[in-house]
Length: 496
Image (cartoon, rainbow, N blue to C red; front, side, top):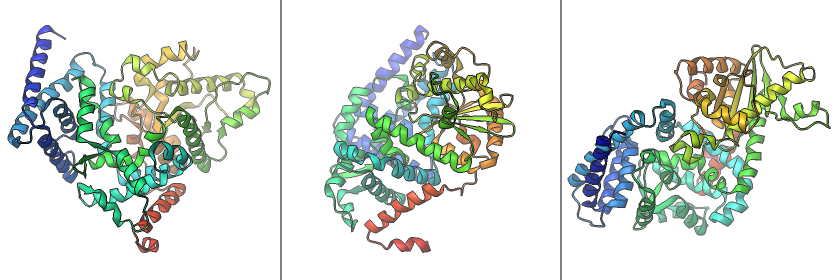
């Protein structure tokens, strides 16, 4: 960075700190909450003056640098925000003008920052259903660590979801007294402690974490995990987008923090994904099927979880439960991408090694035609927004060669390696015999830079009314229990 730009940035930062120091934090909190409420009411694109990620970072900046004074005028806050807004936008531009000329990595940050505000209710419904399926087996751990079971978490979250869906922005704990058949007050207290943060805790977190780093504008992890702010025993929602994310992923985020539960979850995740694939393509070649054809005395070669042969393509599927760590979402530098060597990049290595196995022992796999176009789908629980391996190939290829001993990558183009989520896999399976068409369409659109992640490809194919019977049944079970806990007749749903 040129010296004059560095000096200008330091000066701007000092002026911003001075302006923030003249504000009272309690009033800043309500000012930001009002701005976020407007965004929720009309949509992110309808109020450009209140960009939610700018408002949230302003809240964290003011939490660190403002005082505890109560008498702060709104016009003083707006003046400081206007200066802050210009400062932040100049830093966002610097991502592309300074050290981060890689547009792909810039868009990766942007995706994790902004796509949370675009999830539809169908996607949310499926995520709630999966949490019910996946995490009931972790109830002992959840009870020990958080004092609440998975079903209690989902029911209380669903109850608040209905509250916020009516446009309300806050509540008191007494709201739960309306639950006629739910009297576990300890679970309610533990639930609220898990998903809320106080003003004091927000200030402490900001004091520790805010350092004017470039990536801070993209960091919303705190609000994803704590979507409620508690002030004088009143709970305020930051944004319904964060609460929807909690409803869809809250249990997953809690479980993946522990190594032993991450391993157990990986097995549950792989079983679900494989079950979905086999429900549509029962004759596809699975990892067990590959293993069963090999001599028992041979060293175990790397394999993928499933291989599907279509008329013109060979589709490989590898399931990896762990998606991108937060550090990589915020800063997808070369060094951080390298940290994926034992999960997502390992999945890529397994694809190449499995294809080498088919080449070497083709007589054992007569249904595998290696002349066909080959695709590898790396499936994770959450969306990574990585798109294709080609975008990060200069980071991935050395790891394949040096860590995983994959020396020949000519058999599968990195452009044909797609990173998808479990949502995408469910959508993909709903298309059944059009799956090959989707793969070729994705290849074409990614090559044209007409799409940045796989969900955008699927949106052109999938009927929005599609459903997965297993997920429908799971959601129905949770929904009926919620209705019952509200004291209503579950049979009312049949006429809805």
